[in-house]
Image (tube, rainbow, N blue to C red; front, side):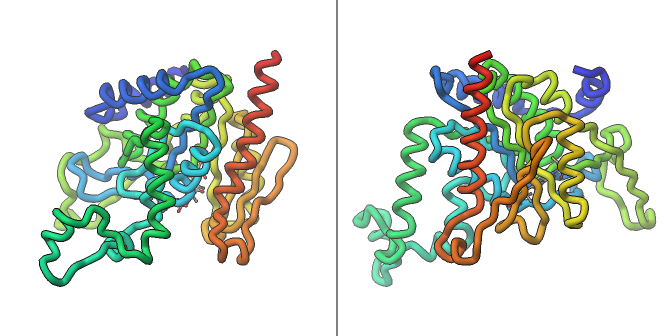
Length: 319
Ligand code: 9Z3
């Protein structure tokens, strides 16, 4: 790895439970490495960049986690084992369908002696009309759990994310072309180095703070060239200015030399993405009609990627 990246990591605080998490990842990869098994790393949600060591304030990157959590489900449906590296408290596979009060609204209440009924007598306190929505999701979730094909690892800060990304990459290296990286997390380009950060909460009495952010080195470069040179790596590009989208996506491909960039505009990300390769680009869209019948764009993205990845594996194995 380049000394620049090594130097950057040497100043980056590692998560306290990194060694335990590495073991979980390693065990998961060993269990899921039968002959034709494919493992995808799905990253999801936004990273935070702390402004103080004892963090009260931080800069956040936008992402609800819809893209990642929905995609993880479709990868599982398509036979992949999934490592889901996600921002704590952002959306997670399966449970994403019942967020907030919607879940409590599904439960039955019994006005007379309700505690006894829920705890003792009633094994399944879900309202009749909600069971139809809950059951298929629950069954899919339970089947994935039973087969041990999903590992969820939370992160909060940019530093956590970068350490965990590297740890997962190390464990996936043995998989060669059967590893797919689907980097949908919204990762900060800027940070404050640890030695430039105040220890305690910034005080307003000191006047308006001047905050100086540094550029985060692009870890996609060592990831593609050193950590996982044989994997199928897909990154996402998020823009708000449509006129920049394709050129920025192609720029990333030329620079990092990975397989594909999925480009999207913040406001339209749920119904349109553009898949950008070195020599072509094409759109995947969901129409209003499809949205009305619960078709999600992630189902189409994953179906397309599965095809590309299978072709890539076949070609790599012939070499
Ligand atoms: C994306 O572009 C994702 O599709 C979204 C998904 C974050 C827009 P939601 O979670 O949103 O469904 O609400 N992710 C990549 C964002 C990013 O930070 N990309 C970097 C860039 O654009 C490169 S890694 O420069």
